[in-house]
Length: 311
Image (cartoon, rainbow, N blue to C red; front, side):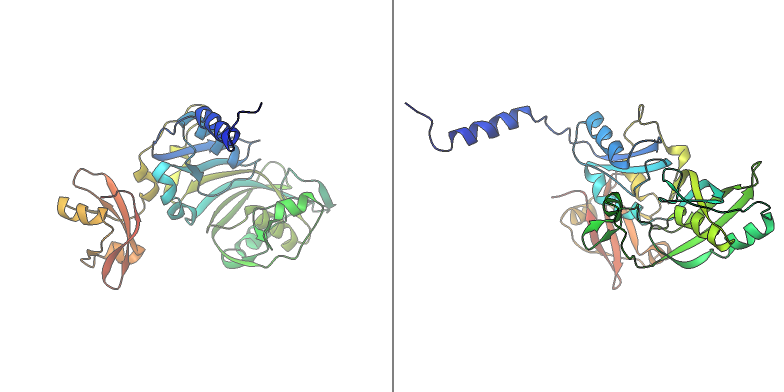
């Protein structure tokens, strides 16, 4: 005789899943990892989640699996602030390898074309690189996280599908190249806007010089004001204050009365200071130095954009 009530099995299954799920640690802050080669940015997120005991971890901009360097993560309430880091300018170093094109535009791909580029003149290489400085348009590589018709390009690339991609505007602030002991390899230093593909810069430089090229040893050295000097090993890292994610913003410290208003998400009066006018946003801190919110300048007032405390 079956004595199981309708819905009992489902309830028991949910209960078992609830017992097996670890409680969230509830921590908030920032983590800056010096991402090692051979792992994805999502792999880093997973490891940080396990180490800190929380699912609430996200990153502020993907790094290719073969790339290393600064990967900024938000934890807990810090995930609400990642958008202010994601759009920041970034700096990179790497090596442009002339004479060989690859399917991924970097050393991880298969060789697709070979060019005789012996006898490259360093002056010509530097002049060609200078031609990419400023506001330019780039076509995203097929092996990238850009979505076309709802599908990521790298997923299509793995299926052997290549689709037409629209050029996207980016800004290159600096593209310095220097010769190395290998006449076909140049060291590159790049400062650029968010969304710029350094792999594409390398490949386009090869094309501009009448041949082809790919990128290797890409390393991100800064994201906004966060530099490689602040990055920690994935095997030995610590949670940093959440303020790190808004360190480039001007700060306004408020008293207890205004802190109360911030907790309710109310607008605040703005004194018209030039720093806030330049950035369009400010970090609001309470009298004890705790980060309370990010406010934006709108119509002569400070309006809530991200409130981290509630009343």
